[in-house]
Length: 209
Length: 393
Image (cartoon, rainbow over all chains, first blue to last red; front, top):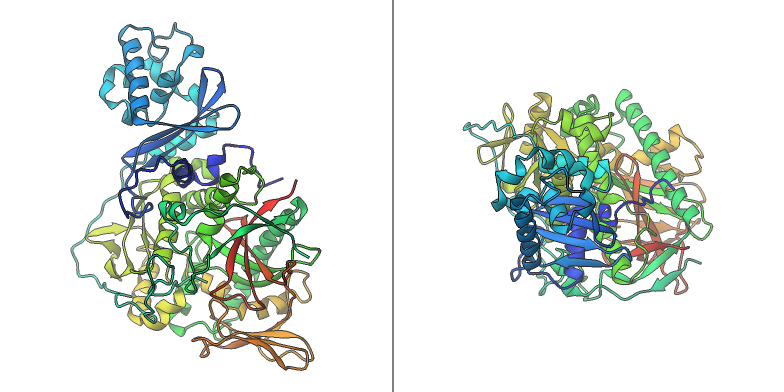
């Protein structure tokens, strides 16, 4: 049983798996004919998958950088619910109030983190800074918040995977202005058969094997 | 007989919403079958083990080819030989992924290697994403599939940095190097396959970008660029032999770039050795009568049912099946006739109740990581269908 993992199904296909779920549930807000994969490198958002492990108790299963921000909650029975932006905003608002009243387990170490609601869990995610960016320093610089973040993940591996994919070191940008050769494979090789509509008889032919 | 079960197909609208646009063949039939092949746990384990064992054999035989200068025998274009040697000599040229094609493995038939698509394999999106979505859409247990393709790719991207070490240590060693992903403009299948890989690299923790091949800049002394931005890695979904034959200047530039250690190219040039169907003759020489191999020769086999293929043929083109008296049983035309022919003993493909043949494809990324099937006639070609699978309880 080497390859059948008992971990989150989303590991099967990462952020693309989440895209599949979202599209299957018909909450896809794809603009017109835009290629869903075209933004693979644009990662200003995050996909967060939260497991409800007991009524009202949550853990972060996975999260991925993504072009849009989405939250999926998995119920104990395996069903999935995608939170709308309105729901996410409301949850974060509610948690922000608690932070202001010092009743949020995110910032007050005396509050049991067992009481952590969904809003608190979302803000614990690496993506939390994107989701609740407007809350700012009062949360993200708070030592309690920093210390117990990892405990809101389903496993140390899930936490470590998330930090790796979100906290990339600055890239080494060396540039050059010397002359370079380009334009290779510019004129489509292969025969040009005219495909119809959305059929896959694309031009040039696929170069795979 | 091989068993399939009918399922509810994924709609074209859904497939397009997730970037899968090549769902319909030129004859207007659906490219993805609305059925799943039923396999057992033991069958899956055997596919997994076969891929792992074969890869070790490929690595050993690759060393033998290099040591004995067998590039001409493998029909390798002369202008890639030095580049292949260079890429072979240093572990940083890490093989990202490939796909083994097998006869047998189900229905009590032994697994036999047909070929190894080591450089630019197709069916990645279908195997990694589509067949999983099929289980999901039909309310089936998603764990009942041999499919960790996406995860394995992510892990293997991390190995570009940790090499033989633990992928978990990626963040410790990664210093912000970037991968530029490229495919040829105008082919959405190639493009989205490339973007799928880009997504995996992104999630692994790399900085990535995408550019069509014709927009990529090459300098022998400085490396690979998008605009004025330099990239340490370049992934190209362009077959090495096409680079060698159609764009000789590019082959020269890449040779210099790798020699000067200005960039690392994925898949590495040495995967062209594995890709050459003539490589299977070398395997047979080194591992005669190995249970996973089919006898392969540069000359017609004596008194055997066999298949003639070209060293770098694609999509089943230029393939001839001969009966044991050398009468032609099936034949496809194609544009690869100038490549060297090889002759491989014929292996019967498993069939379903309607007599359609199935060929298994097992993806390999550091280890076997996913199974998918192609369904067609005697020769798998352009109109073969992709068929997902499910592990029986």
